Length: 151
Image 1: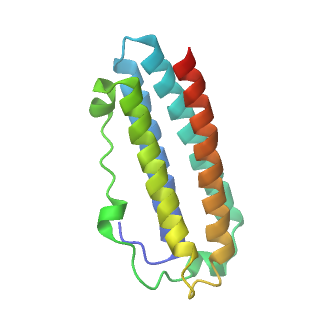
Image 2: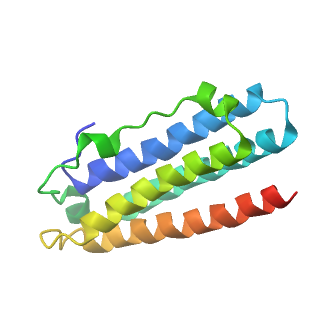
């Protein structure tokens, strides 16, 4: 996917969360241990809800912000999503957590770098809102995952 406008970035972000939700759902069905299955079921639901929240933000966003050009296209390696439900089905609970947080941190880093670009005045507020959402949801996710680890 080529990201040239803010709307493209939002679509990519939504697709990343949606794909992660699908992977977690598929992988949870393959697990026999209850903690890993419970974690993946929770992650699937969380990512699904996040996808819908992003869609609502996009729906209410200023059209000029959505069309704002990201003058330097976002690099392909940042966008690569190698999400594989079979791989998640084989991972430990800690491995699943590491992979999910790594994806969330990539998204956060991308939004942080874009928010700082001076040419994105029209989109700065929208990018900031999405950055705050990603940061907040990642912290909430970390709290829930830590609680599950304590079980």
